[in-house]
Image (cartoon, rainbow, N blue to C red; front, side, top):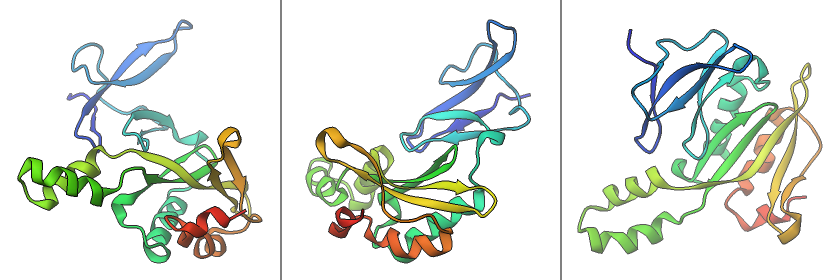
Length: 194
């Protein structure tokens, strides 16, 4: 059987390897090496996860408290309520939070800088910038109540020694929260949220 492989957004392929912990339990990890003890299937209860940096992991679905349709709801809200282009953001989830990451680079500046040097079309330069762009956390929705499915909205604060997440509202359903807050992403009004 062929090995489990995943190609990330940067075009790098990683292969799922299987090993043993010191206690003799199975452990799995992704590596660019195409040799060694390769796994031919994803173990039951796990999924492949690529984070906003393009790193690939195998994660336990039981520990993942956010539902896939809630992640999709955040992605859809970004399209509906924000002025961001699809390449300017990524949505990821870990544990009990859905996080929106914003692109650090200004694509227009990169295109203006690289296009004359590469003597290629604008779209190709734009695709390269998007493929290798970096992303930083900007906003997240933290699950407060698993039964009621209410989330606490937070934004990342970039103020010197107080870097970290700050609350920007009271917990509520994503239906209520998303239209109110995601439109501020990429805008000056984002910094007024608290």
